[in-house]
Length: 87
Image (tube, rainbow, N blue to C red; front, side):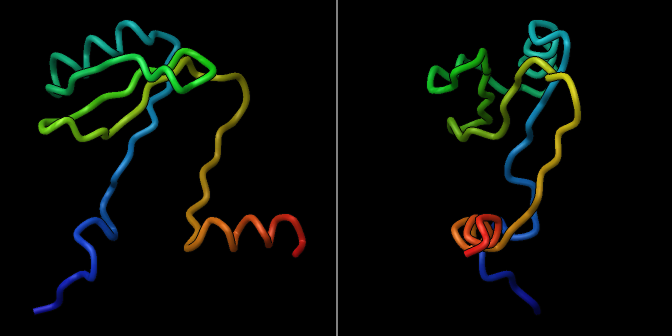
């Protein structure tokens, strides 16, 4: 039997939700998915954080920005940042 060294490796651990209807999306995820939502005050822009049972944060919700969004998976953030700075 093969086991993973971590229970979360290879599994989705965060969802970034972007929409033009944040109120409607918040109501949907609260009711249909069963998450609870609350404002995330540490964000400089309006941002909602969703939590699943046990108070575990699983997603964030924000107004969809203009332009394109990309996310890149890296193994170690500090090493990727250093590469980006040419170090």
